[in-house]
Image (cartoon, rainbow, N blue to C red; front, side):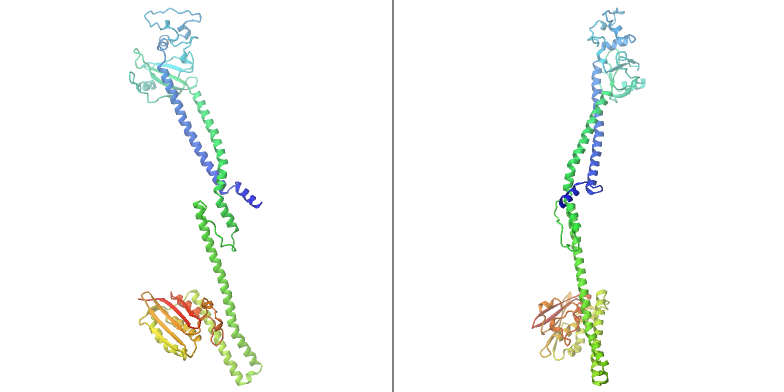
Length: 525
């Protein structure tokens, strides 16, 4: 049921959604293209129809009977019945026997139909223009009125036409003009091929209403087909658009279900769409960074919790001891000089432990924030030889061996490097037997780095403890006695100091054989 509801929500067009915007914009572009195509088609169709009709009129003008034009020119005041005879069939006498006897020819040869009307004037206007620009309306008495232009226009048209065997068209193939009744006509001009009338023109025209009706009919058909195309496009485009946006809808569902508990989930990066795949990779990268951030935050909180617990434990033990001695003294032990001296001595030792612990914590805090080092060129071989008497005193009966390469120089803080050596040496002393113990300090250099090692033959460190020896307040079970074990901050301070000098430190140990600490620092050539 929930799945069907989600599919229905994806299928419907929500205003402002990506699906609705793509659909509206696509239909808008399609409608604009169809409108442009319709306008272009209307213009091309109009020009084609007008050109075709002009060609037909021009061919029809060339076939107008000369007898009809000649009669009209000789007797422009007579109507058709006077020219061709009355309804009873009587014919007037020819006043001039020398005239052309076209009136005696059959009506079919003179351009007349059976009713005595010229057949060429059915939907056509016809006019004759002589060489001087004089206008004679041939069809006005039988049908359409022929529009009349100015003599200058006729002169320009006649100048553009060359009579004879070779003919070239006028600059304007046709003209759209209105006659005296206001009817718009398409007119063409053709030279009159008569030896006795050089330079004369035949003007033939027809109404543009049929052409306009045909254009409107074609335009209406195009509009209907365009509307059907848009409707069909909507019906076909909606499912295609919905299918195209399926990967994006899946991403939305996954993002909605993502929280801090399932940051390990990833989106598929091969869904067949380049943009969606890029978005999936970017989102997966963001999830990975968030996962690392949350993991780092959890680790930081866990370390802080462990740090507070360990610091509280380390501080509670000496404070409890001091508190116990004070209670003993308050109960009357202060009157006994021996008990008073023992209590004060123990309290002094515990206070020194607290002071050392607080100093180490402050030092770690400074190293974590921004270590202030007085760095400069330092010869490590000279530093180790300078510390040799102090190291021998700390070693007691243990054997101390130095294997030092001469003239080994690094960029370091002398005091901090002494602290590193003392911390590691003191750690070796604590885990090495006094009788038969051997502690070796070696120093070797290459072109790029310096390797300093502090090795002992003590009890060693178990593998499960070796991974955590640099953690704060961490101590193996074998070093938790107050006699040999410290607070577990020495190795943490050592690692922070080495890393502040852009170096590394690591430990190698075999239980029962000893431990070796490797310190690597950049060398100064």
